[in-house]
Image 1 (tube, rainbow, N blue to C red):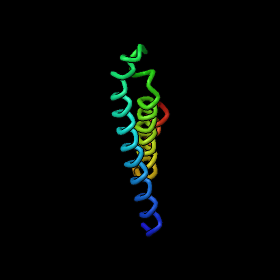
Image 2 (cartoon, rainbow, N blue to C red):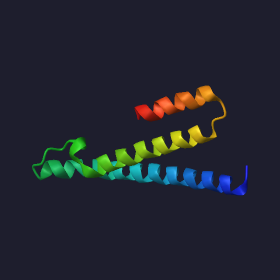
Image 3 (cartoon, rainbow, N blue to C red):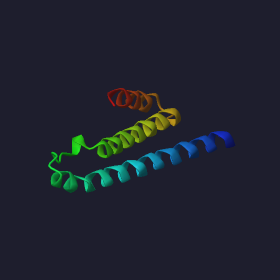
Length: 90
């Protein structure tokens, strides 16, 4: 592998890790806001919290990006087909 390919993979891995960290942080901060929503008289459900939904979105995007990276480096056609099916399901 050339140095540019390795640098590209490292950049993608760092992007995946950043997306996961932002997603976890958003979910945690969104769940901390649930008790305050109940005290304001709002319905405290997780799926109406934008921070929680943003966090889930980031985590799913990081998983999808990771599957695409695995698809690009998989040598076996059977593995590539399996990854392609799992990406299309996601």
